[in-house]
Image (tube, rainbow over all chains, first blue to last red; front, side):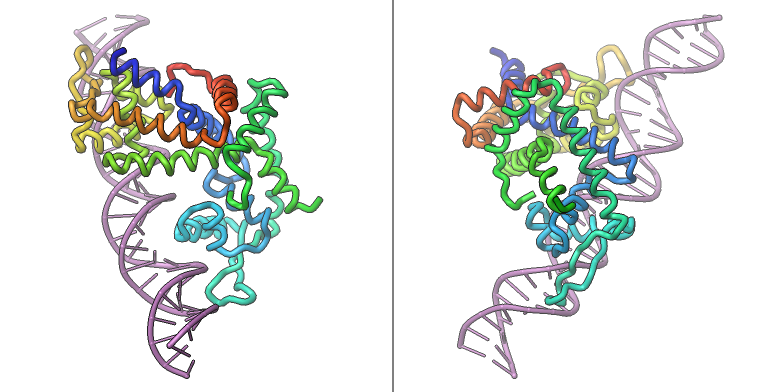
Length: 149
Length: 149
DNA sequence: TGGCAACTGTTGCAAATGCAAATGTTGCAC
DNA sequence: GTGCAACATTTGCATTTGCAACAGTTGCCA
């Protein structure tokens, strides 16, 4: 077996490689759907998290996403500018901010739910319903549903 | 059911969301291993592709990755500077470049294979061998193994 | 109380990325 | 062969991102 064949074999049998491709497809499809709402893949998970958790602190968001705090700080700048989220003074701490959705932001949530359901259905459509259930269950074992996003 | 509960339910039942988390973990683990070789997740797939396909054209790389050509052009700048890949004049076309691995780049390939195998094994380890086989097969149905990377 | 380490958030600067326009090349119809 | 559209690649510029340093706040213990 040549080095080239070996490299090819490694790639084709790599679960991670397939997962990367899958997520790339997923991202492309989501980006298209989100564009119609004026959103991007960078903004979308933030709105979802705030919609799910209600008032949260920036540090909390950062922890759950396993992302650095400065990154959240900057992403929020955009969402605040869009008028979708809002920084409010935290009720008990003067260093923390409470992040909440504006009415405009809240109105987005149901549409985002639809998009998520639609894109998931499309991506999974090559599988039979039983297979879809199988892969979902297996996936749940790989990425335990903690409070992490 | 409140809006918050609904958002939570959508997220937790979303296959795509789990896939995102999985790939994020995968990326983190790969980044750690690659760092020991002085590589990054941006450079790694390029070396793999050139190692697998031998001399390729930049446009071909771009097509296979479904990425814009300018992005490949810039990534190659870094890899050429690292002395891992090389731009050679194309034998038949004067506008195209032939991209090949330098000896130093070729020497990297076996180490990259090891890393891919190691990280895949670690990520899949929560599953039994039968389950690992199952999820791999299901995944193959979702992302057909074409010539696309 | 005073001091200090840990925490929350922001910012300046450098590196990376995306987009649109430019440069040169090629195939092909005329 | 000329002209022109499609191609392969690069580059200038604006936007985004990452990193390290900063400013302010809080908990805690001596």
